Amino acid sequence: MKPIRIVVVDDSLTIRAMIETLLERDRRVEVVGIASNGAEAIDMIRLEKPDVVTLDIAMPGKDGMAILDEIMDLEPCPVIMLSSLMRAGAPIVAEAMDRGAAACFNKAMIVREATRFITLIKDVARGVVDAEVTPVAIAA
Image 1 (spheres, rainbow, N blue to C red):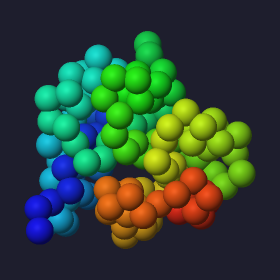
Image 2: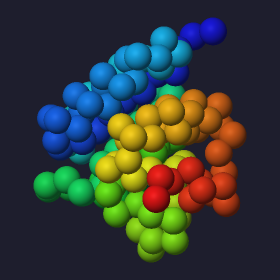
Image 3: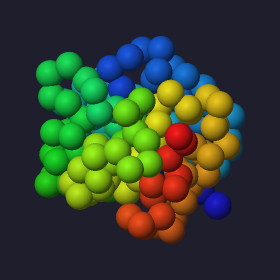
């Protein structure tokens, strides 16, 4: 079985490195690109055609929601939105889902909830996460 190809997008070098290190522990996941801004993200997605993208919401310049819109318009693929604001019932979750996100996850919980995060990535890649189930996958 070929690994799930993922592009990680976050303006924080520390967060990018943390996510990459976490994902590289699982042989079924392959980080094929890392981007620090929207332009890099779109270029990387066009080049790599990933199975899943993780996308930070709060970034300088073009924020994650604007990048999500661009991905959905130009290179549609499953996107997991990341933010410390992602909590069940938060308006930002509904907005991200309405704009095309496949799922949302609380970035502050990635290390503590690493197994849930990786499972969510695999589920999104397989297309088994739907909008009604996604908020449950968010670490509170």
